[in-house]
Length: 224
Image (tube, rainbow, N blue to C red; front, top):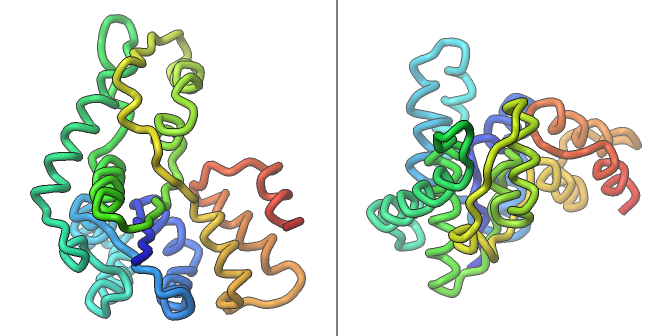
């Protein structure tokens, strides 16, 4: 089994750009399972369902879950309790890694950490998986933790201190963004828009709806 674990940001990005349809189309073409955790479900369905501004997007995602186009972890025999326990461990480490003016800074959400928790559990079960997450902080924790100090210092406009001894817990995760996801959709020919500008249009659309992708990275994808 291969799985793509979707964080809230990716789903919101696709929803705002009218691109949620690529998920079931990619599932048909690749056989990959698209999974979300309860924590992500709360952010993209349970909470926004009661906010008129976001209700339509929540209803679209609700329908996809009901149609099993997006699935919950119990579909791959992973319990809520397993994810909850591991999520708490990751939250404790991540939110005690950056200190500003003598206080720990909360840098990640439980939804993001639940995606890592599910990924780790699936990996331990022998399932190949990747996490789709648009937010930069979690990816830096895993890929380049040494850059976290500069990132957080820029965001907070003063220098922070970095505690690195436990960050090894975030090694060996694999990530993509909504940008790469729509690139795959383009390559698999499931985009509903066609023409020479289609790829460029969807790549930039994901950037301007929250994907932390650079212009250089977009240009590189256009040349592949």
